[in-house]
Amino acid sequence: MTFVKFQPAKEFDKSFYGNCGKFYKDFPNLNLDSGFTFSPRVDISEDSNKFYFELELPGVKKDDLKISYKENVLTISGEKKNLFKDEKEKELLRNERYFGNFKRVFTLPEGINPESIEAKFEDGVLSISVAKAETKTPKEKTIEIK
Image 1 (cartoon, rainbow, N blue to C red):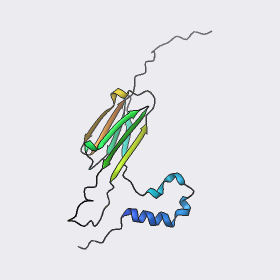
Image 2: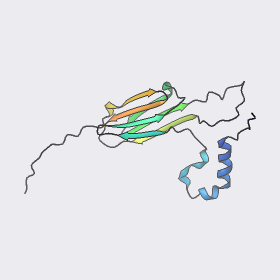
Image 3: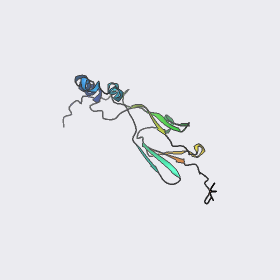
Image 4: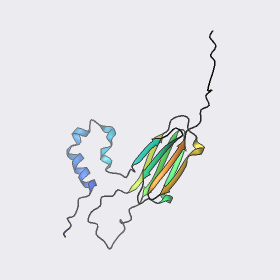
């Protein structure tokens, strides 16, 4: 079996956007010139009591993750290290995985309990749960008519 050397995505990215740059000038906020970066996929769900975040982070170590919360903003950051970049004995024929630093930021709605945020990292999946704060509303109230 013969392997054909693969042109990395970053090289394709430069030539493609270089040739089509005039079309993308109308959309400066797309930030297409920065190349490809690693951004983990996330699923967000909720039930009546909590919000749930599940991020796919295969190959990332727990020690390389950081989760913070401030002013209704949940930030998840970390690094997926390229274990093959210092490999001297092997020649890389194809590289389809992305590596590097990442940061995902989520604005949460008002009325959550920051003390309840819990995180678990298992089998390459980071699971975060955030409890909604209990709003105490009276079950019944008589309204006076003036």
